[in-house]
Length: 149
Image 1 (cartoon, rainbow, N blue to C red):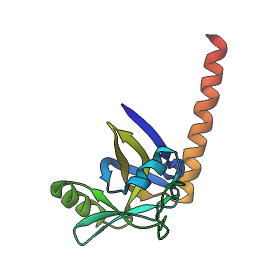
Image 2 (cartoon, rainbow, N blue to C red):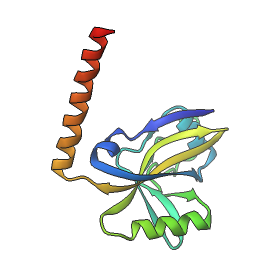
Image 3 (cartoon, rainbow, N blue to C red):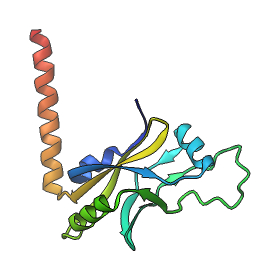
């Protein structure tokens, strides 16, 4: 059973998602408790492969209120847990121009914190406008269909 904690809704607007991958996150106990309290923000975060290991960068996890760690850094880089084969294929994909790794959502799966990463290519202004137009027309069509049901 999955329990979604945080979604990056802007990612689908700003990027064209090519592929999605699930990865574990290496966290401290207090961070896990803070995530369970929905005190996490992935709006401005991204993932990078550095020295053969994947990291989640710029993810803000608020300090757990009952934690005694006074030197806690809420925006520290967190290691992503992926298999070597997955890392190699990801590295190949993001080496092409204009492709990046974007976290789409953080959730718990069987008690473990996971992140859904998207291999994404940035959209242009025209692509963003086309996406909005398509959403508006689909919404209007749904409204019209409901009238006749």
